[in-house]
Length: 133
Image 1 (cartoon, helix red, strand yellow):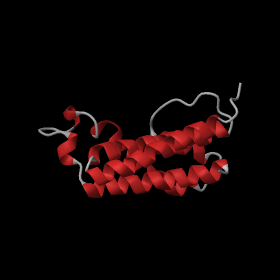
Image 2: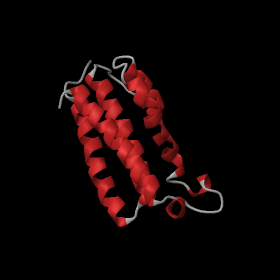
Image 3: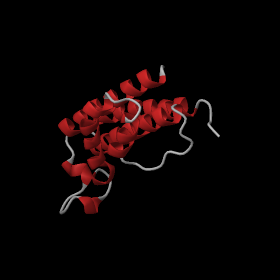
């Protein structure tokens, strides 16, 4: 059964995560910003799918979610490859064994975090338009 308002709930959480990612950017938590950017994009795309009537949306891949959304919004195909770059931060930004000889907190820099955040903002803007909020 379709849960009314589920898309709006997911988008609200994505926007809240985005708000905190902006705070962390100013504080130098670049690896956390990159992870949150991926999460923001994932939640925003799930918001759209729930809004479209999906009952269960599984998975964490921005690439896969964007592909599913593009079935209803073909214009997403142009942006999807850029959005999918956020998938690289899903594991790498969090786990020391994903960065040989270092840790994410040492290798992520401001430029990487800013780029990830800009992409996440773009996905949120798309989701807002798609949901009509």
